[in-house]
Length: 308
Image 1 (cartoon, rainbow, N blue to C red):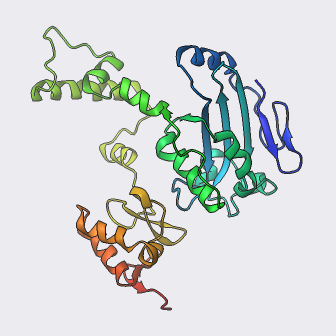
Image 2 (cartoon, rainbow, N blue to C red):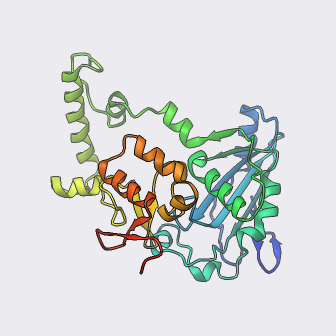
Image 3 (cartoon, one colour):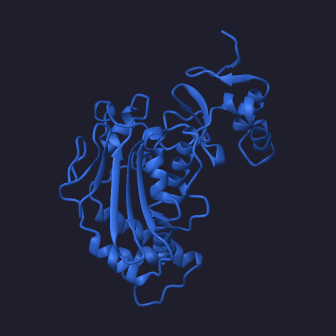
């Protein structure tokens, strides 16, 4: 399989390597595309998309790499990918995850440059990916809005491999016992009996500690590993976070949107928060935002919009 790469200087570049991306060693999925089309009736092309970005908030973060594999109804496969200039510095945390630096995208096209091509690849297609419904689709839709383009994914059916995995491989206690090959003993286990569930949980935890020998060896350290505290969180639950020094919503449809922007343009969302079951801490911050007072990074006080 040969990926078609978009390069800002020469547009379409054939072959397995590009100016900034090396695809050597990538999987040959052409036989898998034919297999998939043989198992699943495709009325129109099925597009698999994956994105790398500056962060996880569609309302604020930007795409830095996009890859698309199109499986046609007859089993043919076509692929396309590009680095994308996000028009902003690459956050160190994001670069640590995907390895894409400012220098790598400096001469790459912006999403606005690529929008016509990406739109053509997604139009009249269905969609697949891993967690594509919750992340990739939303970020793409936000990028199309910023570029002033219609969303070509409206009406697309979505086959999310992550959702399918979660549906067919449940994370129940019995599934954990099977995965870690824990012997149930001579007495049949009674699922959803509290005593049996306690015994099974102890057995699973013991098996996990034996299996993952690199795990922390103290309760404090293991707790910290399991539940890392986000240094950017504003409230204890992490519903509000600092993003580039700005208080930002981290949940729901407005995830990634600054409190100041919501106070100016979508007060109904903040009023909805006050009516729902959020913590008193979150409600106090939101109520202050509705009054024009916002958190200051590094301080506990709030400031009034427009004040020094």
